[in-house]
Length: 127
Length: 168
Image (cartoon, rainbow over all chains, first blue to last red; front, side, top):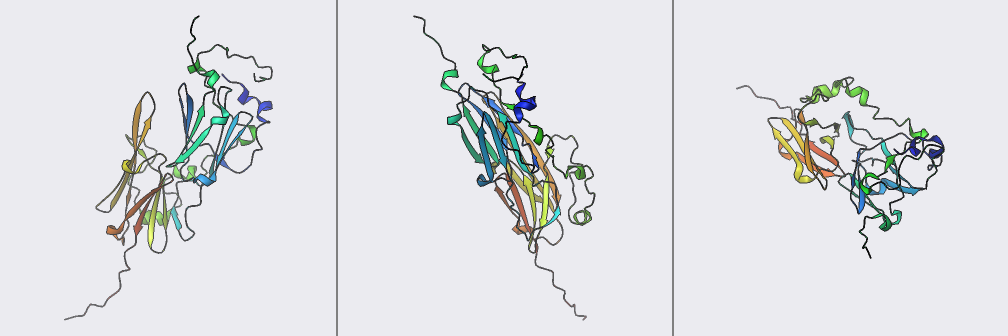
C-alpha cells in the first residue's frame, strides 16, 4: 500500500487546488513491461480544454466540458452534468516522465507513461 | 526514495515488476469535497419536476437504475425552434458500434463499448429508448458522434397549417 496519498502533509505540496466543482472521471490503467497506459473517460471535452500537469510526481488532470450546446437550445430534460473533471494520479519513480504522451480521441484521454529504461525487466548474461 | 512521514515503508524494494504499479489516487484535502453530479438526486425520481418532458417524451426505459442486461444511457433533451435534440454520453464508442433505430415512433439508441486489454476483450451494451413526440419529420432524423457525445437531431415537421374544409 502506498500511504503517502492519505498523508495530509504530503498532499499540501500538491499544485494549487481550485475550488471549482469537479468530478473524478472513470479511468482504467493497463500495465505492460514497457508502459503504463491510463485511459480516462472525458466525454464532451475537447483537446483545448484539457490541462495535464506533472508536478513533483503527481499527474494532475483537469478538464472542462466544452459548452457545446448553443444558446438557442432550450433544455427540456437533463441527466448529464456539465461539471468538469479532475484527477490526480501519483506516479511512482519508475515512470519516465519526459516520455509521457497523451492523446484525446472519442472522449477518451489516453495517457501513456513509459517505464524507465533502468526499471524494465532485463536478463543478465552470466559471465 | 520518498519520505513517508514516519509511516512504515511497507513496500519491499525487490518486489516483482508486475506488482509495483503505484499509480494511486491522490485526493488532496481540498478536493475531498468534489461533488458528484448534483443532478443525481433528481434522477432517483425520474420525472420529478419535469412536467414538460413528460408530455413530450415517454421514458420507456425507466427506471434507469434497474439492473438490466444492458445499462441505460443517460440523455439530455434540448429543443430549439427547428429541432429537438437528444444527447448521450458515449466515451470511447466508435461510429460502427453505435446504433440508432426508429421504429414506430420509438427511437432506440444503443451503443456497445469494447474494452480491449492485452489479456482480454469485453464489451457491454448501453441503450435508451425515447418515444418521439408528435410533429417530427421522421425522415430527416440525423445523428452525430463527436468528442464522446452522441447527438440525435429530430427536426420538427412544418407546422400543420390550419385549413378550412369546405362543405359540399
